[in-house]
Image 1 (cartoon, one colour):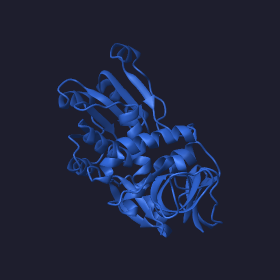
Image 2 (cartoon, rainbow, N blue to C red):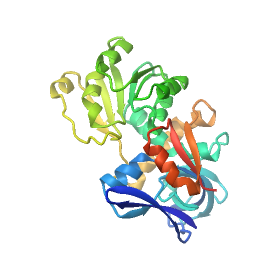
Image 3 (cartoon, rainbow, N blue to C red):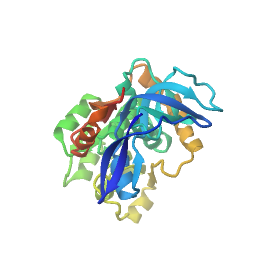
Length: 323
């Protein structure tokens, strides 16, 4: 089968097409024929360059049709149309752990379905499971035009919360406001925290999701409401260190937490998938939420798709059509 590998050389990640055997599903796994997959900055930059590693079969999510079912799998059958997180989805076939399988909503195209798993499951953890955002509260998303950022905005609106997003592009903010985001802040901004306080009527953000990194961390801390929460998700600015105002954190009873799958067991990942399936997937299935696809590339255009993602020109997800 055709596959695409991420190879790290001289601190740069590159893509290489290779022909490899079709994998066989092990216990609790299914084999899917991949119809579409999507790019994730965390894999192509943080995962390969920052944390190192010589090479790996790329891709962390897919939408496709189950071709074979491994021992121990229940509830899923050959021919089922599915989507979910998986490893090695830059390929014509990929293995998916049964605890991460989600049914593909009929209303979604393959490309839209491929844009759901990583972005919306991450947003679900940051906004719902750990962020505990409530109706009427304010969500602040730093880096709102990313796949996770757009998913977080849509998830918050479904919950009845108010949303503020930041971006260095006025055009991206306008597009997100067209999707229902209440307010946008163009960054960098000298009076960032004052703008947040003005927008929220002096309350501050009840939850902030940091998809930018350490350069914005101090400002986000200043913007939080009493008992505010701050989720750390990404580092597109490359800044991995930042100071913490302990007095502010203490007085305002702030909570800081991270969202990462790197050290989770399959069972822990399955818990998130189950919660998302229960709480958010129905809204995608009935059309209340629609995944934001920035652009679709063909399989043999993966290098161009990666280049497009690295220009930071996209709003939402960059998707690759496999078959």
